[in-house]
Length: 105
Image (spheres, rainbow, N blue to C red):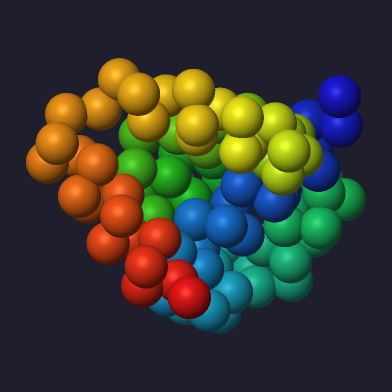
């Protein structure tokens, strides 16, 4: 397993990009220095004092910052997971997954 600092940094970066925020904007909203946020995203430092502010700035619960499972899985395992779980979806959810995949091509 990767170092928790690296995983947390990857997760924060992922969520920041998902929210279409620059490092500068997230740092501003979370009231931290942009350079500090850069070090956090690189996994160089652990943001113990800033975690709540970062989560609040990303409009998520704190526990969502620690959702690393997909960051540690390789693409073969992700494909297997998707195929296994698609069987359990209802028709409406299957249509949604189909539209998502189709829009990615």
